[in-house]
Length: 292
Image (cartoon, rainbow, N blue to C red; front, side, top):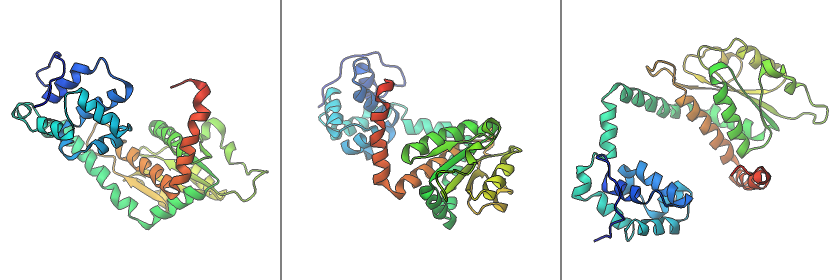
């Protein structure tokens, strides 16, 4: 039998595990708080987890997970899983059941459609053009990213994330800088350059002009766009589509964001040691800012 954690207010929707977590939530280290949050959000799948997998998912050490479980009153993962499967836990509205109930409503329908759109990206990354595009982005001396109107923020976020795993990534805005970034360098002759353009309906007026200009300057172009885009393929073979029309009031940007995440991961995976060295060097640059 396990020892109970200190008493704490329990809401009607609390499972026994959630009650234990709430009992200690005001007195947790940063690492413990991350573990607690992850356990709370992923209770439905804990039967398939191990201490090592939880450590990997939360970014802490396995010993930290073990110590936290003991603090909650569990002798280990076996004790935790026993409580999840106990009669008391079965009275709780399980996270998976809440998920299924949500799927019965309108928002659930949208979630399913968004999930289907994301799974449909498999057909895009299975194309031979995908590997060629990633190779271009990996070997380019400089990578530019642009996006317009409602997806500009998405493109800017992607620029920063790609810049974490490889150097020389810049966001360009045609209206802000007039594409001065594309004036040929007098110092670096014959440098390889690539552009990633993010766009979706309604397509920005300058999108095709920007792509055409890039190709004229010898810049390779990769387009990340929605399922209705037909103009990009006339300028580059590296066009990858994500379904955005899932029946929501506005088009969903979720599949586009996932596709961009896959680009970042694939570029890093071309030389994971180099990407890890870059990430490892970042804290030293960041230190004096005192942001963390």
